[in-house]
Length: 149
Image 1 (cartoon, rainbow, N blue to C red):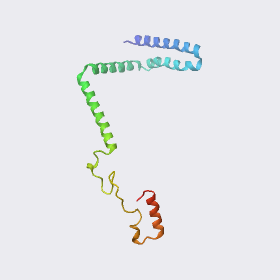
Image 2 (cartoon, rainbow, N blue to C red):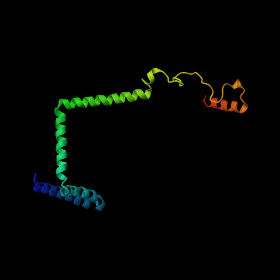
Image 3 (cartoon, helix red, strand yellow):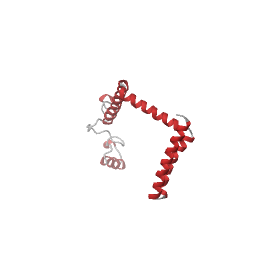
């Protein structure tokens, strides 16, 4: 397209936008007409900055890609591989959140497995018959009451 064609396209879009702006102004008022006015000025700005051609090239490139996507089996194979990869990420996340397959099936050293009801040693001192004073026994009883060993 030559420069005259781009100018004609810009002028047409600007005039159509101007009509839209005027109708909105008449029906809804000034505040409602500001947004159509902003949209109306965009083709003119694109023409003056020479980006209108760039936008059409981008749309052509996206159209070519979409056409290639629809008819190329290699592209579809790539989409299938990307889908399998996404599914593997989702399955891995789900299994990890449930704790399946982490740590080889054993509890790590010093931790109890789920369902293991063994009591550990008290958090403070040893056993109560080791000669603890009354204050420490009270603290230990309080911790036991709260479920802290």
